[in-house]
Image (cartoon, rainbow, N blue to C red; front, side, top):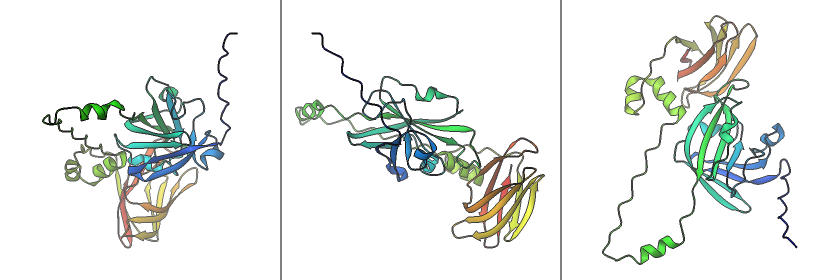
Length: 285
């Protein structure tokens, strides 16, 4: 009798717990469940159905919300380690690249020969409303060294010195760090090794606490509280003609607020650059 092929593994039930994902340098730790529906992503990170599982060849896809569990991805660097722990074992991946794509670009989940991990979240991180793009982190699995390697080293003559280990590459500046350096000054940008790009079309403003002002046609801002020590602000923005309110709650200096104005149809960015006891300064562009 001819041998029968093994039965395929049963499908994973939606919202089933798969394991835990950690990025130690970012102090990011979150459980991973199966599926990417709103209920699942409201509880945990979601394993994207149809992509590989840790330990399988292919591309492991994991999605999460940019304003909750994946908020820390804005600070991720190349060469950061990502750990995915499941009941079957632990797998480590090293970040190789990041990029921004459209929601329709599913090529980032394509499987390749070597095991890899793809993290997906919405972008921009500080966008108000449904973000138009996706932020992608690509990482490749770090395979365990061969078991024969230690024995080979032990048999080498004692007088043979090992070659010095190569210095690890310097971490790249994160998106947020780059933005902050450019926003400060050309001197600060040069000190951090980042090209300074002067802003164009900026409108500088200063607003006293418990006051408001119009920053541009159809765009106003008010400040209700300031904390100079932690450089945080409470307030609001009013966008016309849709009468939309954007609340600023415990908002940090240099964290951009990105939104579209219906009057001009353009993307705007508001950044608070300094927080005093009774006022704030910043710019709108």
